[in-house]
Length: 263
Image (spheres, rainbow, N blue to C red):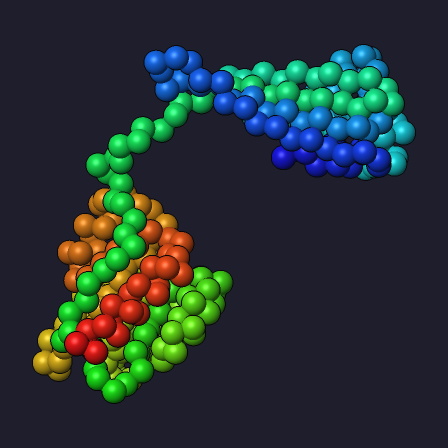
């Protein structure tokens, strides 16, 4: 990113061209990734290139005065590339622009899913006992991140759901206890005050005390490891999704409830 922002900053006419090439070894998943950033900017002389990656260094005093900067960006970029066992080469000529080429080794991921990572689902089946005919779908969102709350509310608004959002497990329990039953609950598994696992256990206990049908609880987590999914199921959740949950997944859940109602 530093190479790209520099290229844009120092190019007043012409343009910046970015290419990315994967050089794959035969019969191996070990590859070399080559990223090239080429601009038509001011360019540099060979003596400027020599000190380009020094710490707190600008190629000339004029550069610092006109464009600003601390002289750390390229130093840090080189340190990162070195840690990745990569290389940086620079081709430049005053008045004709510069080209930065970064190469580093990469390993292609296996096409077979890891047994420790759960696959994302796009279709789900809900039980008819978990819906109420004649009512709007009541949805409770337990999510401590306000932005995630807004995204979920926005996606659910397209389905005309009756939605309520809370910020932690304790608030979710209070809302569930005081506001009657919910059809669908999106439960963030990691929240302050009380996490989603414990919150789900308490909700299931409340349902047992009421003798009422259970809400369909969907666990949400940014961690896709299977152990998180197992914890969610053990706590009493019905399904588990890896964040960010998509609009397609939301729509599929809502339509599943609607189909059960019609049937």
